[in-house]
Length: 180
Ligand code: IMP
Ligand code: MG
Image 1 (spheres, helix red, strand yellow):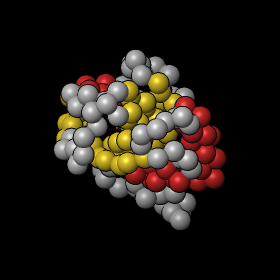
Image 2: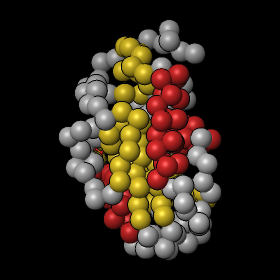
Image 3: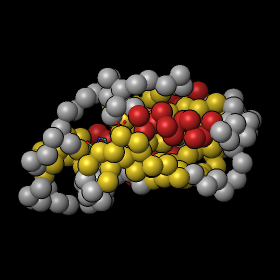
Image 4: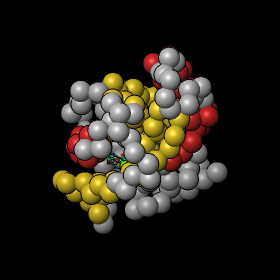
């Protein structure tokens, strides 16, 4: 554990709190997809969603298949206005229900662009989940479910969230020192 790490200002969500909230989200998804006959596609947004997705899928009790989509919203530590998306499906999602798993939705630009890209492959529906969904985000027309619908304001690291590609492995979510 790196609680002593001098880049961390404060732990905002402990690992236990994240797991607890993830189970609540999983239960809502279990309810939503309980009568599903076909498997639901989990589309993991690399790289930040990995820890959340791995925790979430353990608690899902409907059939799923898994694929990846890559997005980068930052370049050289600066947020770029047009996120870069790379999607090379390993199987068809046509007429399938898709759940996009993200780490954090801030302005909503990235998720909007992700949806636009995914829609080209004709899924029958899109559901969105993330650890954080900021209340001020641009909302999509899809069902959206978050561990926390909050606006922490500060720059967050841990549990998938990075600063300069570091800290994704922290088991908790923390505020980084000296960055807004
Ligand atoms: P949006 O396009 O403004 O919604 O930004 C979302 C993207 O920026 C997500 O893919 C996040 O990974 C990243 N992001 C936004 N805020 C933070 C943060 O506080 N820490 C780490 N990554 C962030
Ligand atoms: Mg991200």
